Every structure is written in C-alpha cells, then in structure tokens.
Length: 471
Ligand SMILES: Cc1cc2nc3c(=O)[nH]c(=O)nc-3n(C[C@H](O)[C@H](O)[C@H](O)COP(=O)(O)OP(=O)(O)OC[C@H]3O[C@@H](n4cnc5c(N)ncnc54)[C@H](O)[C@@H]3O)c2cc1C
Ligand SMILES: *[C@@H]1O[C@H](CO)[C@@H](O)[C@H](O)[C@H]1NC(C)=O
Ligand SMILES: *[C@@H]1O[C@H](CO)[C@@H](O)[C@H](O)[C@H]1NC(C)=O
Ligand SMILES: *[C@@H]1O[C@H](CO)[C@@H](O)[C@H](O)[C@H]1NC(C)=O
Ligand SMILES: *[C@@H]1O[C@H](CO)[C@@H](O)[C@H](O)[C@H]1NC(C)=O
Ligand SMILES: *[C@@H]1O[C@H](CO)[C@@H](O)[C@H](O)[C@H]1NC(C)=O
Image (cartoon, rainbow, N blue to C red; front, side, top):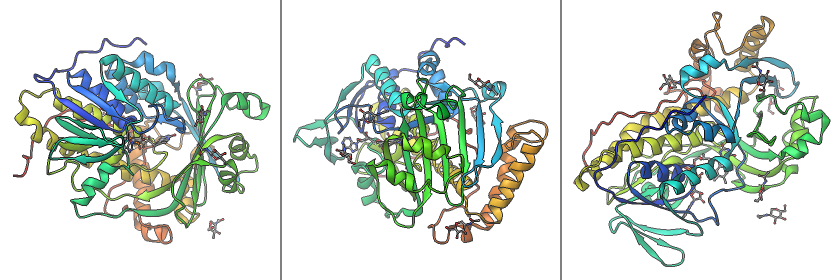
C-alpha cells in the first residue's frame, strides 16, 4: 500500500502567531496541522522534552489512522505501528474463553483506516518530528504559570512573557487553561467513578526471554478480560515486542494519579485473575506503571474564553477516560478540524467567529465519544449481575457457533455496534442506577450509548459559523 501524495490543504491568506500551551498529543498535532495551512506556531511544554516516556501502549482506532493517511503519512505511521487483526475475549477470574473477533481487512478499508498498536511515546515523537519538519517552533522546560487572555500573553516560570494572536490551551485535564475556563463558567464537578486504571509497558526483551509469554508476540492480537468490576487488556505496543497493559480495577477510594507506581501495587489487583495467570505474569515484568483514577467528567459550557482569543483542545477541553482508545484520537481530530478552519482565514476579524465555530463543530461529538468510551469500559468491567450474565451468554453462544461476538448472522460487523448497543446498552441504561450505586454516576441514562471498541470516528470538515463573539 503506497501513501497517497498529500494534497496541499487550503492555505490561510494571513499568517497568525499561535502559542500552544502543552506539547502532548493535542499540542503537537495542532502545531503540525496549523503549520500545514500556513500559520506560525510555538509550542510550550513544561517537561524536559516532548516524548513523555511514562506513556504506555496506545491503540489507534481506524479513523485516527485515517487522519494520518489523509495527511499522506501512511507509510511513516505504519513503521511505528503494528496492524492488529484480532481481539480475544476472556473472563478475568476464570480465564474462560469468550471467543474472538477478526478485523476483516475489507471492512477496515471501508472505515478508511486500520486498527494499529503503538507506544504513545513514539506517536508523540512522530508528531513532534512532523511539526518540526513543517517549521513549527518548540520550547521544552517552558512551564506556563499564568495566562493573560486580554493581553494575549503567557508568563513562563522563568518570568519570561510571550505574546501571540491566539492562545491554544492543550495542557490536559489538570492543566491551568481548563481551570481558567472553569473559573468563568458555572463550574461543573467531575466525580470519581470508583474505578482506577493501571497502565504499564512490558519491555519486549523481557517477554521474549520468557517461553510462556513469547507466544503472545507476533500475533498482532489484543486480549481483553471481562471481570466483575475489573477488566484487563493486553496488546503488542508497536513492532519491537513491547506489550501494553491496561488494567481497570475497583477501588472505592480515589488515590489520585501517580506516574511512578510500583508493580506490586498493580499486581495486588490482579491476584484473583485467571488461573492461567497471563495477566499476572505480564504485570510482574512491567515497567513504568502508572495509576490514573477514572472520573465521570462534566462538560465545559464553552472551550473559548470570552475575554480574548484563547481556546482549549484535547483533554483540556474534553477529558477522556484513561486508557481510552479515543483520547489521543480526539486530540488529533480536534487539531485537524481547528487547522481546517484556520486554513480559510482571510481577515483578522474572522478570528473570533472561527474560534467559536470550533467547539460548535466538536463539542457534541467529543461528548458522545466520551460517553461511548465510558460505556466500553463499563461493558468490560460490569459487576457480575444480570447484565454481565447476558453479555457472557451472548459471547459464548457466538463462540460455540464459531462466530464473532461482534458481528451479526450475515457476518456484517456494521450491525454489530447497533445490535450490541440495542441488546446491552439499553439494558445497561435501565439498570444504570443499580450498576453505579457505590461507584459514582455515569450519565448513561440521558444519553444514547454505543459500544464501539473504538471504531467510530468521523472528522468533521464542514464549516459552520453559527455564532458570533458576544459583545
Ligand atoms: C504522562 C501521560 C501518559 C499517558 N499514557 C497514555 C497511554 O499509555 N495510553 C493512552 O492511550 N493514553 C495515555 N495518556 C493519555 C493521553 O495522552 C491523553 O488522553 C490524550 O493524549 C490527550 O492529550 P492532550 O495533549 O490533550 O493532554 P495530555 O496528554 O494530558 O498533555 C498535556 C501536556 O501539557 C503539558 N503541560 C501541562 N501544564 C503545562 C504548563 N503549565 N505549561 C506547559 N506545559 C504544560 C503536560 O506536561 C503535557 O505534556 C497519557 C497521558 C499522560 C499525561
Ligand atoms: C520507562 O521510563 C523511563 C524514564 O522515565 C524511560 O527511560 C524508559 O525508556 C521507559 N521504559 C519503556 C519501556 O518505555
Ligand atoms: C494476524 O496477523 C498475524 C501476524 O501477521 C498472523 O500470524 C495471523 O495469522 C493473522 N490472523 C488472522 C486471523 O488474520
Ligand atoms: C463481584 O464482586 C462483588 C464485590 O466485590 C462481590 O460482592 C460479588 O460476590 C462478586 N460476584 C461474583 C459472582 O463473584
Ligand atoms: C519512582 O519510585 C522509585 C521507588 O519506588 C524511586 O526509586 C524513583 O526515584 C522514583 N522515580 C521518580 C522519577 O520519581
Ligand atoms: C469512520 O469514518 C467513516 C468515514 O468518515 C464513516 O463512514 C464511518 O461511519 C466511521 N466509523 C466506522 C465505524 O467506520
């Protein structure tokens, strides 16, 4: 498969200066995307470099690889990634086989992308290189301590003041830009769900050195364990044998985020996992273990500051649950849409309406994706009650017929999302109260949820300027 020649995107008639606060998925992709349409960009990152090695494995859903392919980057992306073709499902406690699903090539082609596995650090490095080649500017060790929205400036920890035409807050869920917008809106509170996620990498050489585990290499598969209030996930993160582990566990107490956790802490939660001990064996060899609580996030009313040209993107605008297949994807989609808008700029007067158009295009989608993602986590980790029994019965019935649990009788996987949604999520909604008592609340009831395992993405490229800046 050869990459298509990237078509040159629509170029801005006037070049603006963008200051991007935060150099992770959102900030790095914004820098590249904005350079591609002819704007000037400076990215400020508080860390010493742009490739946070605490990152673990990352699963790239088809419609995100599609964004890369549209940018003419298929070949380069594929070098960093492993193309996944299977998902295996098992019970967490018993290890019982619940069947598997093959990602059929033609179907994936219909989505326009591939389901890819990588290390998030590699993806960030790649985004950095792209922007760098395109002429974006970067500063590491540049922690922003305050933002003057009306003065269009930011102050660094060093005391240095930098100015720009537009300030982009890409500093994540806990960054100062989200706080700034929360201050001037009726502050919604996010609540802890009673679930915490552990994220780790198992270095390839450790896996290869263990005959019992090396058989998991080269299969390009993803393994998912459904547990009673917990779930596990294992996949090959890229093509040099590192394995990514995601473990969702029940924990009544919010212990906060810790990027430097011990293996022992993570293992404590895997002690009752399957007799085959696949999860434990991998977990024991893990490095760079982090712990991130799962919150039921509430939505900001707006992502644009009313006092000046400042806008949020990525997790700063719409935090995704940790380990979410869509976290980085939503950040990159944001950047693609944002840059698409600003590639059409012909006058500075348009800036406010372009800024306001951005959340108009993105808010609904990111919100529904977040709800989906929470639904996916919940689907895997639902407590053992009627819902889980039904889910497992469905998986086993399909397994016994040698059929994918995610396809309908005709083998059409598009019905999959629909039918799983109908069958499982609507039940889930009815029982949402029971399910979430003691866990915190997920807003499933008022929302339609879908189970998509990361398949549903669409980059909106239509431009609707429906709002003007309030005077
Ligand atoms: C350390 C880490 C590891 C992660 N690991 C994984 C993983 O293994 N798999 C996965 O799927 N997802 C992972 N994620 C989540 C994923 O990165 C996010 O969901 C998604 O990429 C959204 O990215 P973002 O750029 O919006 O925000 P974030 O990734 O949160 O990035 C925010 C960036 O802003 C910087 N920053 C914050 N405040 C300031 C400031 N005042 N001045 C300058 N810079 C600032 C931060 O250092 C950070 O680089 C991880 C996130 C982090 C922070
Ligand atoms: C773990 O993190 C350290 C630094 O924090 C880094 O040097 C190392 O490469 C990471 N390990 C893996 C396997 O990514
Ligand atoms: C998936 O890919 C692996 C590695 O390329 C291959 O060995 C395996 O046969 C493939 N499985 C299916 C079902 O296509
Ligand atoms: C599921 O976990 C809960 C809480 O730990 C426990 O009370 C219940 O017995 C478990 N259910 C099964 C079927 O093991
Ligand atoms: C991580 O924790 C270990 C002890 O568990 C400690 O030795 C190490 O210095 C810590 N690393 C960082 C970067 O905090
Ligand atoms: C992915 O993108 C395509 C094209 O934008 C869209 O038709 C499709 O519904 C999206 N989702 C899936 C699951 O393919």
